[in-house]
Image (cartoon, rainbow, N blue to C red; front, side):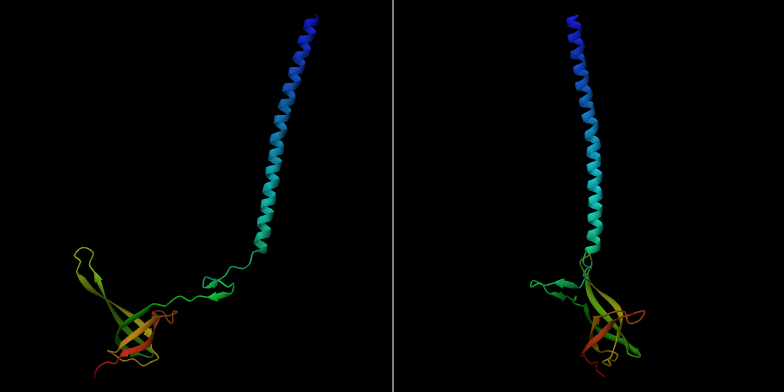
Length: 155
C-alpha cells in the first residue's frame, strides 16, 4: 500500500505540474495579446497626434537653404528660336520653330517643324527671327511669349 500511495502522490504532483504549465501557457498568450493591443492603441494615438502637430507641407518651389532660411527656387523656362509665320492677330504671332532630328534607322538628319502661338507685346512682324519663352496658359492655344526680336525681316 505504501507504494500505491507514493505512486498516487507522484502522479498527483505530475498532474499538478502539467496543469500549472498549461495555465502558464494560456496566460502568456493572453498577456501578449493584451500587450500587443495596447501597443497598437499607443501607435494609433501617436499617429493622430503627429498628424495634428505636423507642420504644413512646403510648396514644391520652396527649398530650404544651407543657412536655414527658405528660398523659392524657380525652374528655368524653356526657350525656342523661330521665325514669325503669321502676325494677323492682335498681340499674337505664330512662330515656326525648326529643329534637326537624326533618323533612328538611316542616321540621316531631317527637319522637323512646329508652330507655336506666342503673345507679342514687342510688335514682331512676319519674317522676323524671334526668341520665345514658355509661360502660363494665356488662352486655349497660347502658352508662349515673345522675349526679343533677334533679327528683323528684310523688306
